[in-house]
Each structure stands twice: as C-alpha cells, then as structure tokens.
Length: 305
Image (cartoon, rainbow, N blue to C red; front, side, top):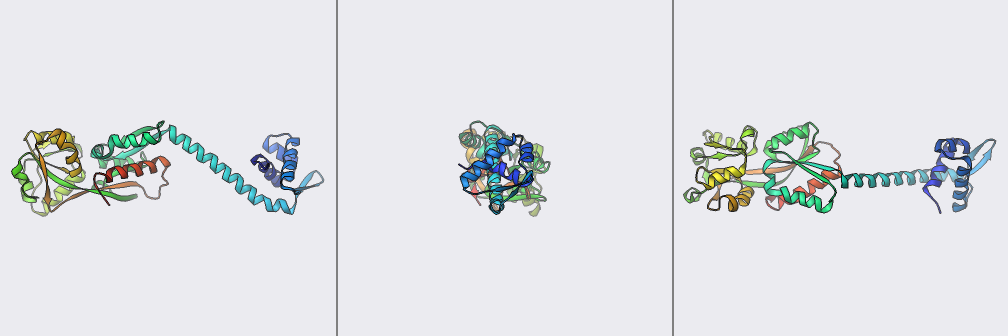
C-alpha cells in the first residue's frame, strides 16, 4: 500500500540523487530508506531509480511521479494543519466586539450559541460602546465586531451593514405618545440619556444632535446615566423620557417600565448595525463563527438589511 512515508523518502532521494544523503536528511538509516523505495516501486510496479556510481538517477516514471507526490504531501500537511486549527479553536478563546446595548439583542443568547457548538471554548464579548470597540479594532486587539454604524470611522475598515433598528421616544405619559415626536417637541422634552461617558461619539446622540440642529434646536438632557436600563427605570418612574432603539425598548419596558410606551420620531431615525473588521484581513474561523452567529441573533430582533 502506498504511504506518505514512502513518498517522503522518494522525494528526498529524488532531490539529493543519493540514498545516503536522503537518509541523513530524514534522520533514518540508509537501509530503511532503501526499503521504502523498494516498497513504493513494488506498489506501483515500476522502477523509480537507477544506480549510477555511488548515487541514483531518477527514471522517466520518477520524473512523472514527483509533482504528484509533492501535491499529495502538501495536501496531507494542509489536512494536519486544518485539524490542529480546529483543535485549537475548540479549546481556545473567542473574542468578539459588540456595541454596548448588544446585550439586549444577542448577549447571553450569543454566548449560548457558541458554547452549544464548541463547549470547550472560552468566550469574551468586549465593549461598552461602539466607539470604544472601534478603537480596539484599529489597534488590532480585536479581529471583528458588530457596531452601531454612525459610530464607526470607515477608513481602513471593512464595514458591512446587517440590520437597522428604529429609534423611538419612550414615555410613561400616554399624552406624549399620541403622535410622532418632532424635533421641536424633542428639544422641549425632559430627557434621561444613557451612554454619558461616550456622549460625544454615541451613535444615537449623533443622530439626535443632527436632527435638532437641522431644525434650529439645541439638544438637551435633564439626566445623564451610563446604562440604558437605568434610563428606562427612570422613565417608568415618570421622572423623564428617553430615546432608545425599538429593540431595546421592547426588551426592557415589560420588565422595567411596564406602564411606559413608545412612539416614532418625525422624521423617523434608524440606528444601523454593521459587521466591522480591518479591510483585507483574513478572518480566523473563530471570528467568522461569531460574525455568523451575531448577525443571525441581531437580525431576529432588528430589521435585516
């Protein structure tokens, strides 16, 4: 039976033109190399080398066999590397960047999806805000991430939009939800806004500032907090209103502010979510897996693109 070991010995003898030098290169005894060549010749039913002085000369059959042997050994090495990569993948660490409120769309469920497929991996979901995660991508500390599109500088990055979610006005006062909220009404509202640390780069605030500036209004907030959950709780207490993505509102209101509701803005605004990684990067199997699973999860809640 033809073996990879036989092909390895054959190529070494072919290259060196000597059984002795081939044995030295491979770290075998010369009789062992000679035996492998004889076994290969017997399997193929052909003569591969002729003895000339102290060396050997390949036959025409050997010349024909050489490229096939090289391809076979390369394929075997590729197979070994692929198996090692899968083994490392299954027992290694998967890191993936996510925008802050991603926990409301795909947090625990996304981790569960990964562990269902690869129980031995260690999972890290990184990020409190899209601008922070984008910086980690630029520094090469993350391979890929799902981010709010308005917070991403596309220079040097491959940006693939995958979903969008409408921004909605949330209030516990039914009278404020009778019609879409205009820029004028928004500027006059008593608002609690999350993401206070990233207020300058937060995608929702960027869109709201643009909406208000185009209407000649100035953005203002009465209360600043970090977490969207706290903002929703304060809305539920009747202390302020807020603007958050519809998906977040649908997830949080039943639990934290069951008496509150939401309505669209006028004009309607949408937060766009995108897969982001360095342009031209060859993504690892781990990054490709996370992109697939995160996209599936967020598209189940937000509107797919």
